Image 1 (spheres, one colour):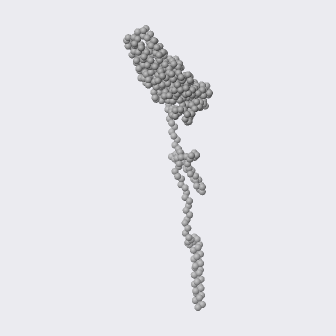
Image 2 (cartoon, helix red, strand yellow):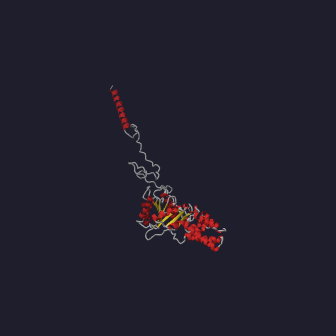
Image 3 (cartoon, helix red, strand yellow):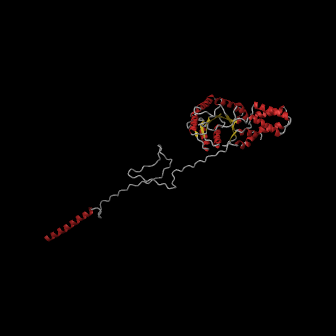
Length: 406
C-alpha cells in the first residue's frame, strides 16, 4: 500500500515538474514560445518629391509655391541639376532693326513722289508747250497751280515769271520750258532754308524736340519714324509719350522705340498729366546723357482753346529744365489749304520751327510745300512718302522739284 502511494507521489512530482517547465518555456519570449501576436508597427512612409512647380506658380505674397519638409524628418537634399534640366529658359535677345540711312531717302522715293504729282508737272508742261498761249491758256495754267495748293501769291508770281520768259524767248520747246519751270519752282520752294532737325547735344543736355499737330495726321507714327531716322545717324534717343489721352498712343510709341532699341518714358495711368510725362522724359534724357528727346503730344483741334492752352503748359513745364530746341508741326498734305489755318494757330501757341508733311505721296497737291512755308515762314523739314517704317525722309527741295517735273 505504501509502495503504491509512493509511486503515485513520484509520478505526480514528475508531472508537476513537467508542467512548471512547460509554463516557463511558454512564457519566455524569443525561445520558440509564443506570446499574443501583435501587429508590427507600420513604418512612417518617406515622402516622395512631387513634380517641380513651374517658375510662374507663386503665392499671392510672391514666394515660389513649394512644400515644407515634415517636422520629424531631415530636409531633403537639393536636387542636382543635370545639364538638360533647365528651370527657366532665357528668352532670346531680340534682334534690333537697323534703319535705312536717312541720306538719299528722298531720292530713293522720287518715283513714288513723281507718280503722285504727275498731274501738276505734266499739266503745266502740256499747257506751256502747246501753240497759241492766249489769256484763256494762261488762266488754265493758273488753275492748275491753284489746284495743286500752291497758293494765290505763289501762283501769281510763277505765272508772271513764265509769261515774261515766253514773251521774250517765244519758244515752245519742252526742254526749255521745263528748265524755266524748274528754276521758278525751286525758287518758290526756297532751297536756302535751314532744314536740319535739332539732333545734337547742346552743352550738357540733349536737344529737345516737341511734336504737335491735329488728330489723324499720323503724329505718333511720325515720332516713331523720326526716331529711326536719328538712330540711323547714330544718335542716342529718348521718347516721351506725352499723349496720355489716347489709350494706345503710349503702347504704339513704345513699340516703335523697342524695334530700334530706344527707351520710352510713359505713364501707365490713363489720363495722366501730359506735362508731367514730358518733364520726366526730359529729366531722363539729361540723366542718361542722350542726344535727343522726342516728345509726342496728343492730337488736338486748333479751335479748342483749352487743349491749345494745355499744349502751352507742356512747353512751359518742359522749359523749367531745358529750352525746347525744335517744335515740329505734323500736317496731312492731303488737307491742302485747310491745314494752313491749323498751322497758324499752333505757331501762335508754341512757336513752330519746322513742318513735317505726311501723306505727300497720296496727293497731287505738292504745292502745299510752298504755301505752308510762305504762310509760317518756317521750312518743311521732313516728308512722309508711304506707310513703311523708313518712309520718312528729310526734305530735299531739288529732288522734290525734279520729282514733280519727272
